[in-house]
Image (tube, rainbow, N blue to C red; front, side, top):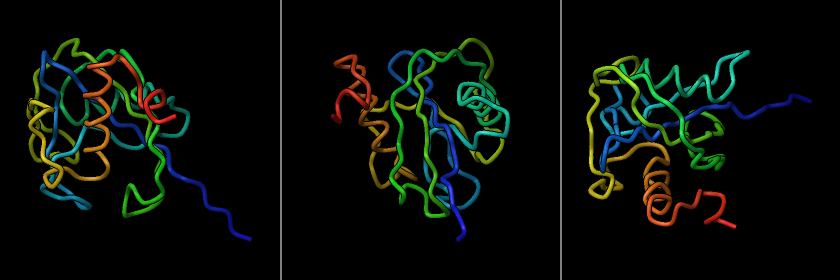
Length: 145
C-alpha cells in the first residue's frame, strides 16, 4: 500500500497599519491572482522558520511573528495536492516591499477591500478570518469550534 501525506506549508498576513501585504503570483496555480506570502516548509525547518524565510523571499521584508491565525487543511485548498497551511499574523521589522520568488508584484492592500474572485487558494477565507481576529481578537480555531 502506498502512503500519501499532506505537504506542510505556511501563509503569512503581514500587517502595516490597516493594510496587509498581498503578492501577485507569477506562476501557476493562480497565476496573476493576489495571494498571501507563503510557501513550503523545508525539511528540518519549523513552521515559524518557514514563515519568516518565505516572507523575506517573497516580499523583501523581515518580519516578527505575533500570532497563529489558524491551520487550514481542506484537501482541496490547493489544486496541485493536499497541503496543510499554518497561517500566521506578523509585523514588519525592516526591509523594503518588493516582489521576490514566485511573485510578480507585492503591494500593501486594505483587507476590507479584497474581492474573492481576485484571490487564489483559500486566502480569501484566511483574510476573512483575519478581519474577525482583528475585531474580536480571536483566532481561526476559536471562531470555528
